[in-house]
Image (cartoon, rainbow, N blue to C red):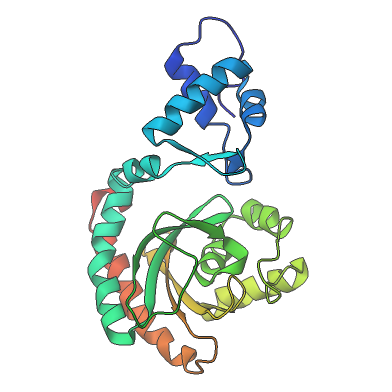
Length: 258
């Protein structure tokens, strides 16, 4: 983790970046003292810099006094070429898919042990859901997350299996069962959930992948959220796959994704 050095002479910029580097996917919310300790910054200095970062929008101070990454950094992150390219390429496919099924459609990428939602299309008929563009949800409790986790390196999968947390009474938290479910996701090429992240919502997701000479590479997951009583989810898999393949084909034409 950056910023652990307490050596004198560190610039203000270096100290501020050290404070931001104290956050990670396992600890997205931290108190002042935790940030100061993790970054190697004196408490008074950390307090002053955190106030400035929060004022600018890089951080948000919660009601309980803890800090979390602010929306301003997410907005800047969207300007990164790869992230921007992904959203621009996927947007028309998501809109077409939403026009067809009339339910929420979203696109996510893996960030550590979380699914980062980079785009979403929804309407008045859509099921209420917790994900928003820029939100991060556990891989093991979401359809897009399970797709991304099934395609993740072995060390990531093992870390995820050691940190399964219950989101609802339906969340799968047994490592053995989750390991079997991920194997099934790899076999059938799609993932399903039913009220595992939030009550009243089920999801279906497929991988978005690049076809390369050395094998496919999963770069994102495309998913929909529907009422849990809907029984025709398997029939929607081909519709999702068509859109995912379209996104994948367009991405392979861009320099950043080759």
